[in-house]
Image 1 (spheres, rainbow, N blue to C red):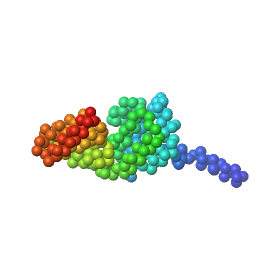
Image 2: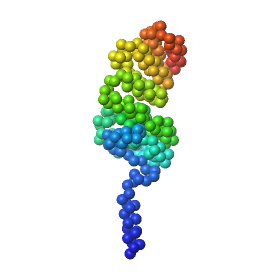
Image 3: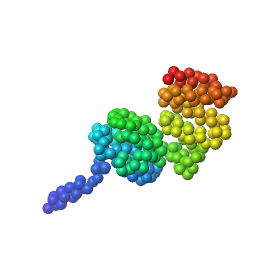
Image 4: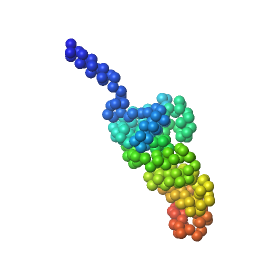
Length: 244
């Protein structure tokens, strides 16, 4: 009798243990605000996966990529994973400008985009991206917290752009440089404007977007003809033209 009771107790424990508790399972959040609140407690970045039931490449990601122990371990240790349904969560689809799936957006704990990938990605490549991203985004979160209180805070926009550039997140960095450049603080202060343009141009160079980089450095030479960085602008302009 005791054996039967013990067996039933064991069976109950096995059947009632959530699949997410397995060592190699990914704990997917489906509610972004809830995931963000959890992420902010530990200053972890988030990985948002936009998917749908009918999406064949999404099923490939599920069976061949997320099942890979390296990916599952990297996500569990470094990220908060969020699954967003393309058809049922249209507000988030619009917010992140997702036009096709699968689409993966890496963000800070507040949900501000750091980098994204569209389409299927191999397990090796996804694990490498996760490992390359900062596991602690406390500084991004600090600045993002300021911007949630005041989205036009010039110092926070400028510093966020600089921090993102330092982390090698050039596209997102440029988004914040542009926002900072549109503020009156930059328009009225040549020193601030020049620093922002330099950051933009260097980001374009690192993104191998020669045409955009050339336009920025040509503007720098025109707007700041007496700048101590003039020789640098000339050199960077030459580099940009080689990329065109």
